[in-house]
Length: 307
Image (cartoon, rainbow, N blue to C red):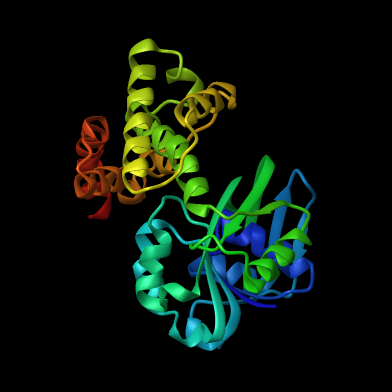
């Protein structure tokens, strides 16, 4: 399978390297010093599941140089989605499939505006992985899970083909008939961790047990649940309780990636992680006061980071 990895960071770099290791024809899209290091030394993966080095690695910063592929894997930060989606035309052949493994619940519809929704396959991932230095990805979580699904719930040959490509890598991979449920269930947790982690500037273990802050976590998750149900997403009846249990069992040192970006003064995924709750809530007539408060409190920091 010919694959283009759009965004060779912790997610795209890691999964792309595993796919290349299994013989897939993978091209990595990267920029700057990271691109130069990959070209010169290959892409190095340092992982608790075993180290991998892809050398030589096919890498570029120009999508037009790649040509049509079978699979486009979107792994860029959410705020770069539109820019890269608008440049994907040279990658699109008659049967090209596009999958997003990005955070949030909007990626498929955003990318689909440029490539056409029929090309889109839904995707979600759970992994802790990041660029350690140019050309080097460090992956630290026991979990490395990908769930794939057609947006209409059907089980298709292309879904099976992408599933099989990932399955060969040894990660946990699943095919689902309800990818919307999967995405929103994950989003309930990740939006809460991104919101309260960014506000408190503390790791998960330092705020989850503080009663007043825990109340905000629960309220925010409830707002996300209400927005999802208003859009017809069939979430589990106890989705908030299970998400809270996941938070309680998670390592106390966890910091959300958005939280790390804000702490470092970088641009963040605030729109995809928090702003979307209020936007979709207003469209559906659902009140989201906690999400709106968090968004308003963090927005000045984001505006400053954007320059």
